[in-house]
Image (tube, rainbow, N blue to C red; front, side, top):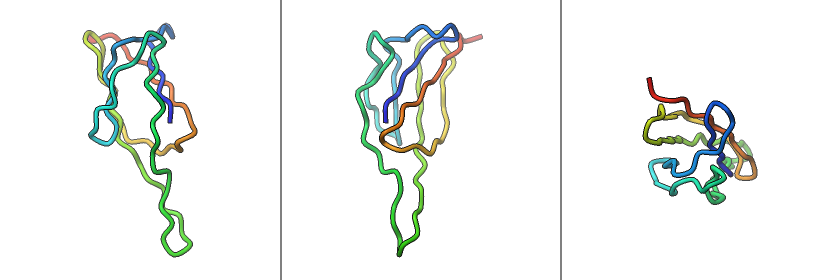
Length: 86
């Protein structure tokens, strides 16, 4: 999974802290991107796929924190926009 973080004008946000499933994976670079993360997409239980959700938090000073559960495969990119704090 790739994560790209921008502001509301679609400008990349560097230095945003990214936490996935309770583990800090670092901060975004000058392009607003974190290194690719490998996640479990689903588990196979007796022929039935059980898709895994992943909790993601993204924070940066002066911006509202993004905090949500997502279902996503490891080969996908998510784009998150952070809004300025009120």
